[in-house]
Image (cartoon, rainbow, N blue to C red):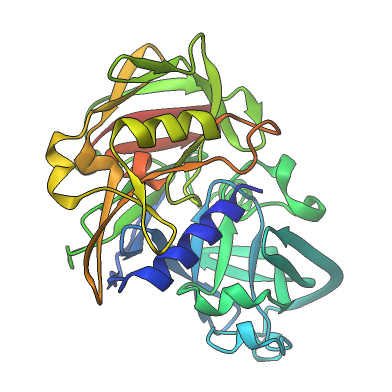
Length: 364
């Protein structure tokens, strides 16, 4: 599961920087077009999450909307592990629409397991009430979840990677007629200091206010993760992914993750070095002169400048300029590249389940 990388990167950011949490409450609904907008919080350009509710009356939770998984889980009131303590917990006894399931549920992460059981209730996302949604109540969380600013995860991947064959929230959202088309789009605001918003997800369409030009679409090659062919990539004279390679667009991964040998070469070409915290960083004064990285998708070039792939944060010791590339921990067992929030932040991304394709346009 590719969210393992996301979790590890979030922990690193929490430890090494004072993250700025940007709260926005943009919940708008259009009955005419049957689409809905979910506002996102921005935690230091490292993680993005939004608010949902479960039950009647609604119990609020913050979740990562993760295209690299397909299940919804939140902590349960029955959770006794210390990692649950800082988070909101679902109380089935307080909901009139709760239906017992009870089937055991577990997900293995790189740093520990999540254990719980399945339940059913009304889930509200962006003002849309999804009836009878099966989700997991976590009764035991690995200790690293205690440091996370979000309560749970809502997966937006294909149903084929859903644990226990649970129908994903997005599938039910469409089948219940809450949105007119099985499409959703991501806009991420990469300015962590901008208090006006962290971004948004549009369910059922796209927001033309947040992109310019037209979309470049690539077909989904494997309907699990949002996986597609990347034509090639380069930085300076160094070319990689020659002849094409497989990639996924994953909102649950903070950085760009690729083959270790390629990522190490990129580090070398941009003069990155390992800081005392273990992060790969560059001198903040060098950002404007860093080479551009080019990714080719659907025959079109998608450049990332140093300003795009360097994440600037501030901690007690001053400014830190971390490199937005990391080795793909699952390299050799899945797609070569994970295009995470660093890429999605530059390019407005459309996930089109109706036509099984992913589209990219320059974010605005």
